[in-house]
Image (cartoon, rainbow, N blue to C red; front, side, top):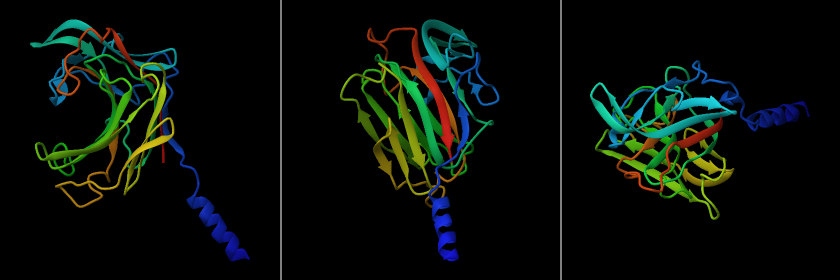
Length: 258
């Protein structure tokens, strides 16, 4: 009887709910710099993007319980780099990184052609080689001319241009992702990554590759989080009249469980 009781305790322990290990509720009056760094660059993200990411309150701020990343249509010229838009991009690199877990974000995504909000993960190091041999996990992306559809994707395989991507999409049947907040999540383990929206599982991947090592590489190492709002680029295209500026990506919370 005693051994049966111990066995039951072991099963219960294995089935225990994941614990919250990191979060930001954005309840303060400014960004928590112990958790996030604000990036500044006009490199175009390797995608011919049109924005310059700035560390300014108009582009990155916390207000009314939300992280606000805001894109503006304006002429920017910094150190000879000229852009027609400004925006914001933050990351947890050198502050926090995780291997496996549930990553949950409640956010409202902007709409309009040329807008490209993204919440995603990159490895802390190029352990298996340059992008994308060391991996990338896109928790949620949206291109503004399809505001009812989100994308969940992994990038893996070889270093560019030998890289590949695998992913799925989810579309709302009523309204779009700019109308209200939705909860976007992934559950990442050693042998699978699953994507959810509002607790609905919409995609799962169980196979990937890296030219730098055997599976489960590259998704067996610490990854940090990035939140940004890009403008233009090879995928969303140039903004048109449907994109209203300033445009906002709002995040209510980020919660990570392990």
